Length: 372
Ligand SMILES: Nc1nc2c(ncn2[C@@H]2O[C@H](COP(=O)(O)OP(=O)(O)OP(=O)(O)O)[C@@H](O)[C@H]2O)c(=O)[nH]1
Ligand SMILES: [Mg+2]
Image (tube, rainbow, N blue to C red; front, side):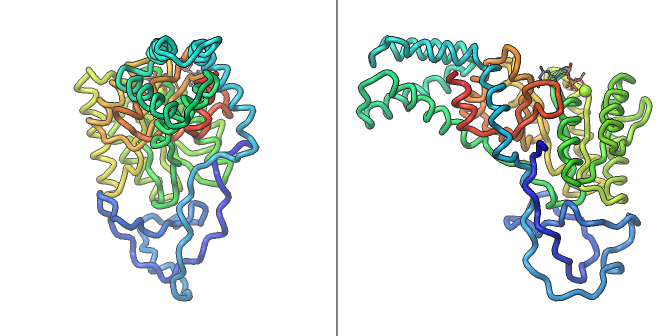
């Protein structure tokens, strides 16, 4: 079975818990003890936990929050798909090393190949400087050695983007998903729901893309397929739907609430304001929410992806990215540009339309796939 999760040890029974209080919007330096993702929660939303908790032994160290991780054994086939998807890019970078010597011509070819792969000027400059340093200090004499050093340089550049999505610190963990039209938001939510549900986490979907009936129906299909609940409202206000969903998630003790929003361009200022409103209103239902604000990016977008990250980050304060469609003609280098210029963590990458085509991002793997 495919999974993002590491199995979690059985939940410790909490000591007589204090009544729930609103968590401050800014997380404290020390994360609060995580609630188990899988522990049964109150079905009587408003009832204080202190009333329900049986006498319990003194508190013990709470289990760590759950990183949403991939299982190592299941990555290899998937890596092949990523390689195939990025082959175009990889081939042009790899081609620079064929029958090459370590000279200026090689660096020029690499510069052109990296720029062609959407790496952008700043990240390309950085990588080439870093590569020259590595070549010098390793006293490499063969182009094949330089190739390995470039893969190291790319992996090191991408490493700050490697981060696991953690759920369980809040119940529910509220995840808001945004992006331009057609980026793959709803599909990614569907895939993520499946994997969360597979592992026993209860998920509630919020159809905050209220503009098109088709959008609600699309999410409804995913909800049915995954047998999870959905909060949806014909022609409703996206912020109101999100507010209702977070309240329902709290009342029903859901582990995760996933909020699907309508696609929009950063230049559509009124629609960007609407996203801000959704975020604000969600915080009225739970002061600590949303706990994650994800931007979904179509991997084929090229350098424009960086502009999207900057614009949505400025509007919403992004906590993570999902890069989709890396199976098509995507070149992948834009992740280097993001790492260099706006390093928002990449939680997942999408490599197709099927359920299993969503994986956690690993810098080293991605660097290798990029190199062909
Ligand atoms: N090849 C491929 N197609 C994908 C991937 N992710 C999504 N898609 C396809 O991209 C198209 C748009 O996906 P949606 O999930 O509807 O995108 P969206 O961002 O929700 O779109 P709007 O709500 O209209 O803004 C669909 O045809 C998906 O099947 C992926 O990783 N690879
Ligand atoms: Mg959608």
